Image (cartoon, rainbow, N blue to C red; front, side, top):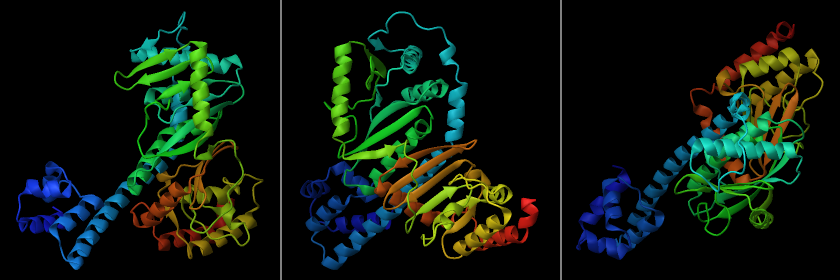
Length: 441
């Protein structure tokens, strides 16, 4: 039982009336009140305020209880946010495996289904085959109208999108998605939910054949919203797939007028989004560095140290990433001609100086595989990059609130066991500087 619960239980024991009466006067369900007393549940700020008013406590005592609740909520919120940020980072650095898995799936080699799909697909195997066939037909048709995705898609549809686009040939297709972010008055919970939503879609954002564009709406309710046409759906130019949340079946709409109506309605919601340019995988302009930004990548943020008068970045990198730069002279986050050995070591010396003045630390090699990069700009958003064989794919998420939360969590994570100390980081940099000629050779 928490200290807050113990204090509330002690105070309620002195209340002259019954628990049922107290619950009624506070506007709290009696079972909820019992859970608060026993420590099974933490009161909301509004519930605690109602209790304090009914109990008529002195101002000093009320302030102490309010402080206990704030401390407890902040602690729980920090833990939940850390799990959400860790999930996003882990998801980002597992993108490579997700794309490789999508390439190896064999469903597309099955014989094509004949005729038109039924109006309702209850069987998951049939759902998989009909949706995959519709997606492949769209990709082979040359139709340039965008594919439209709802804010939430069941895992099966996300998997089929990944599979179809990874296996397709030809030019990239435009994909529109309308994201719904929660804004319910519980900021930490909203951030955790929104980070989880992004994590689910990370693999789709790095498929070369998908030119993804996303717009963002905030909502006080969780999707789907009745009547808003934002239920889980996949809108192709000639087919609409909508999920039935109760049966987990899939509705298939082929009537041209009905499909066109759904696409027009989607377009209206998309155009009215709160943030019109929330997500873009076509943008390749680097964000200018800013105070408080955080970088994650196997290679340290050396490209930022080449910029005059730029604020020092924070970030985590690996020994393998640094040694690979010294060996090759290639800046992964800013592809250009390899730097000569003397310029490489000059940059490593600047990195050492930066490590002594900013949160730049080494982490375990397995945490940050090469080829992936994240920049969190607290006033601009998240920049994600994947580089394979010299080809770079960039994703820009323009949502400062999320980026600020990511920066805050990464800054607080510096004491974790997998992150080396500043002393260990500086010692390794000194070793690299002293043995630079050997490494480059």
